[in-house]
Image (cartoon, rainbow, N blue to C red; front, side):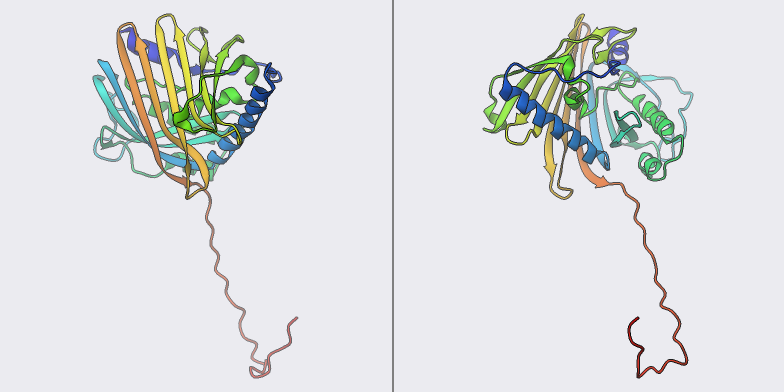
Length: 315
């Protein structure tokens, strides 16, 4: 069925080789706003990279899609069982979700599914977090294997890489801004009086999103940006190629406890020739992953020759 094969094809993320400076916009006000947004996006992901969130991810399809068997039904899960694949129109996932900056300064999302359709697939041990708390030479490879495993639980039983709430922010990276043409869009007062809408259209090739084998998929969409701060409060990415229409929308909010901005909700919508797939992910229980150490201080033994009534002078 074309609907399931497309989901596996459309969403491979590649970065174009070479680094070019961000293209200068004709409007100085727009260029200044984009510069603030770029600095904000870099700071946002840097802060989020030390935080893990709990993600509740609901996927629905108008037609039944392949699904993999759930390993370790009822608790402890190892690898995948050899059972026959089923099909479904609805899927609910709970995962630990975090962003990790790789050695190449890329933002890599990791989603570790621990519950599928209300069935635990492993003990809740936050295994991805522990990989980065106690890293070894193969931590990245092991975490990527976990993400690949988790991706199989999607409707269609494939991994998608743009279903990442901060995906659109990579378009603001200095290395990628030159790919796009930006322009002010229509005001959206619902998002606040100080929020400007900025539209973008990808012009460079190869494109950031690619299909298989090597199909360019042009991205366009909008950013909602606070004028004074460059804070990005909403993003929308669209792809419309060869009968495929995909939309990814993310809303952001401030987590008061951690005092940082975080994703609040991600919505996906895929319109295909033979069906429709939607996804909705919400994020909560944000917590920093960090090593906590404690130490016990034992006072030195008393000196028997020391007169307790006449303590020695401080040294």
